[in-house]
Length: 234
Image 1: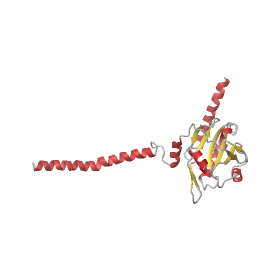
Image 2: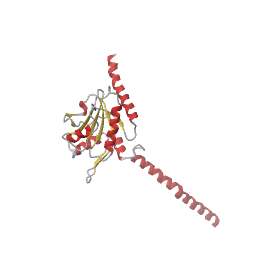
Image 3: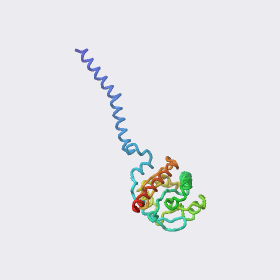
Image 4: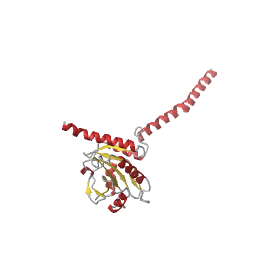
């Protein structure tokens, strides 16, 4: 009898050991995957930039109703412009990424058909550095891209404090953080395509998507914009 009890005791201990070695780690892994899935929004957002964009869910949202001041010192709002608008955000003290993205935009600008830009599509680059950037600085910066760039407006927020502006653009998925010591601004670099009704219809990631892909998508959206007008004429 003692041998039988010893046998069952040994089996029980072996089962407990297997439980500790397999079931508990498997359970821990399952819980980790569950919480990681929640944190990354079902494995779709792995950075603060993509998380903010996903959380905002900006497609079909209106572009923020922000007063802007152009490099020509003219007041306007994005909603005032009747064409498609490709919009990005920068600041001029940016040590690297802003200039890289604007150089990429310059390439896209010159690769677009001249019958499209600026008559059907325009570019708007908005600085979110309300502390340092001004009209003179953005005008000088724009001049580096050459004289013949009609349809590309560089602009600043007008009569809005930085906190409110950051909140407005976060609502469409732009992540911005100003370091309180260095004053450098860390930010996302997405491009927002806004239609004639001021709705965001496409978002591009120039770090991941090629110029060719972005141009193809822009042309597709232009065709879709023209189709309702053509159907009304028939």
